[in-house]
Length: 388
Ligand SMILES: Cc1cc2nc3c(=O)[nH]c(=O)nc-3n(C[C@H](O)[C@H](O)[C@H](O)COP(=O)(O)OP(=O)(O)OC[C@H]3O[C@@H](n4cnc5c(N)ncnc54)[C@H](O)[C@@H]3O)c2cc1C
Image (tube, rainbow, N blue to C red; front, top):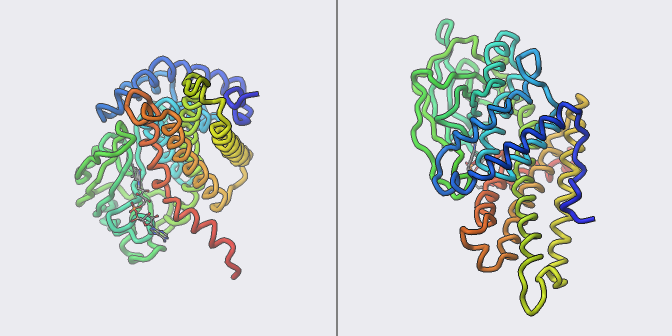
């Protein structure tokens, strides 16, 4: 059996989920895939793809039915994300970010907050998560954004950078420090901010190596005032919420990276079966077969780890930060390796824009950087062995 027939131990899906995946596959093949090269070359936000996804109710799948969603499983969401990202990584991360922003709402928001926002996200609103700051990247706890209570309101002052969906989001989930609690980790808190709130502005849009259609913005919060009812969880509970958030968002960015890896692997397989040198298809050279074998083994193992963690989440069990780090690190390293090897296997043609492996390699790089750089993940995994 070839790896292309082996679906990486695809998760068990209900009939409803399988049928949603079929509609998604049609939308991906007929529309999102067709626009991917143009999205990359123009660097414009993929509004047409958002429309396509909203026509099939894509956001609704990760919102429970009591908030107007379809309430599909985490595994089904991850499977959809792989398929979208395989076709267009920019669209994949744009959509995934809506899910990421929904996580703290689903896990920690009060009932009134859930009723206010989740149906809107289910209906297709865009959302963003604002954690990183100019002076607080890998050490996010060094954030300087301040939440100052002002009567029934909260005043937000600060700057955030590299915010996916920045400038296009309807809702921003913002981490900052509750001023009365000081400047330490135990002051970290969470608030949601509607996109049209005065005092929230886009400082700049990044011009990136890859994911060129995804919006990445630096944001300024200057005297930005929201009601205190927009606080998610208690003041000071932000770090716990951040950890809960990352345990769900890291498998999600792993699925996104696996979409890129699989696209590169499949393109490589089809190219090495066609390209003839020295009178043979290059797939017949053993050196090429060994390389494919290593990539295939890594791909299958990463996909299986993803499904096993997803199944645990769907059973209501937790996954540990170390497991989330192992998955994120291996899937994103694989995306970089598979895309680099795919370019190599295409020879000089792989270096030119006529073949999509060129784009996939540029798209892959950031998967090793965002949602915790892979150095940080190695640190999380490594320090778990230090005896206390
Ligand atoms: C396209 C894109 C989209 C993004 N989207 C979002 C988003 O939606 N929301 C959001 O909040 N953030 C987002 N980010 C931010 C991203 O999560 C950060 O860029 C990332 O966490 C790294 O922070 P930094 O860029 O400040 O790098 P730094 O933290 O300055 O790191 C620089 C280098 O030092 C290394 N390093 C740092 N500390 C250590 C250490 N302790 N041990 C070993 N090495 C270390 C890092 O691994 C890295 O190689 C996005 C970034 C990009 C590029």
